[in-house]
Image (tube, rainbow, N blue to C red; front, top):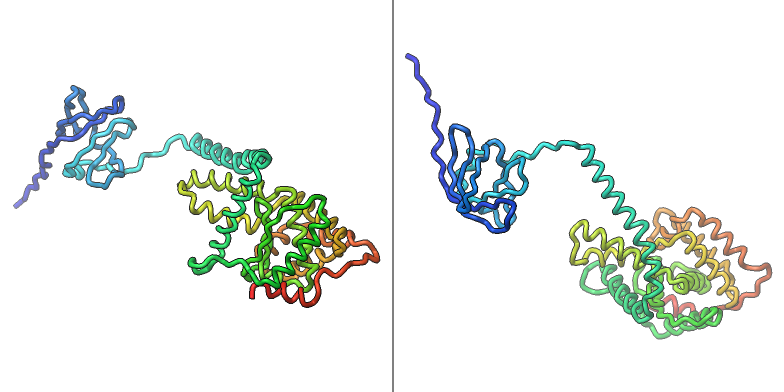
Length: 373
């Protein structure tokens, strides 16, 4: 006995939906059914517009509002939409979630390459040029505000717990020793600089300059140095960056680049950009020319202050000896392939028989090393 299996007849579909014709922003109600003969979704909108969409060509657009509706479109028409609250049509749409076939890949890759090139040009060419130009017009009070806010962000960023910003060291005897060191360097400057010098209570071997004449030394740097002259040589190097306004240009360049990346990747609030900016300023990678200029500036200031410029070579050598354990500041110097040349230049800047005058007494040097106690 033969049993004949009769094909299951799909249940008739009928529903009301909302139709967008792609030409006007005003939606209209549409009554829909499925034409079983042509296997198409057909309907008549209240505006009189007729639709005839083959089921195989209908795709579902992700519903961004909450996934409680079906948003449909045709594969060959990117603007028309039909919105349904009735999901019973879904089983009748065999390819509703099929991704459209990518055609003409070569132009697509071409546009992608062009977009990447444009972003690269903005970040590496346009932003630096604009930063250099803009730095000339920022008023001193604007630079001071930028430096102050950035220092606060750095203090927060360096805190491992996220609860307490890294404090500024305030031991009175240590501050007096630091002020004496600054006064000695100030006396040798071409023009006096209104510097704000701080020591952060952190083990990082680091020092950097910020916009607005801020110079930041770290406890780790002072502890690693073996003489006050070594600290003074780094101090003088950072003053060179201040005088050249390198920190302001670097901050503007970093902020501009991070702003572009924030727009691309959706950080419109700027939270991540602020943290990255603080990190970029801690690990400031100035150009070889800027580093050489800061070195030459330090050589001249140290010599005029009766401090041997070779102290800069000594602490550079100590950084290099740290090798693989390089902190950001050490890595900054090691990133320049001509470090050996810079060490030799610092030694050459010290004349034979140079009569250096001690910078601090033994007691003052101990006070500076304990400035965070």
